[in-house]
Image 1: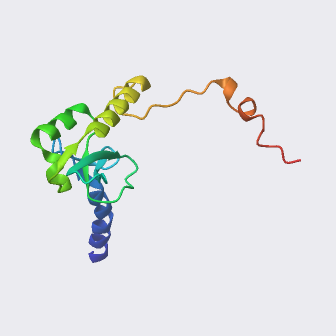
Image 2: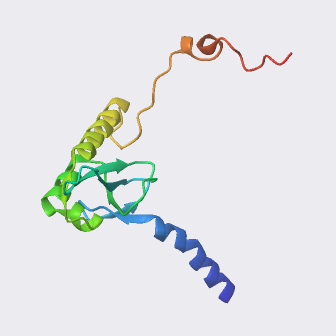
Image 3: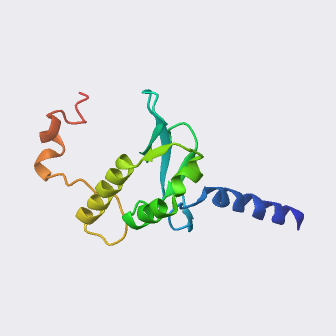
Length: 141
């Protein structure tokens, strides 16, 4: 009985760690559905930090999580949530994050689905296989 409870707790832990809270709407969601943003300081000596999108979750530093929708971005801006979440007291420039979200929205719209999915690049039949690179994979003779 104890072993079963222990296994149940072990199975539940990773899913709990993967849930993050959106700084805009304050809803918890899986981290694959959220966009991580980080503050990046410029070297000009000004007290300005730019907030950049980190879609691969690789940039160093403290990050904040946001649904990649204009609505959540607007809510986060109205609540001034980025400064608190990133623990930055400088003026924040959000141009790159808003541009990333606009591009993300356009890619979702061009994909044709109403659910947020990544846009799939269409490859014509003529460009695939032998015609694309003129080197078939099975040339080992």
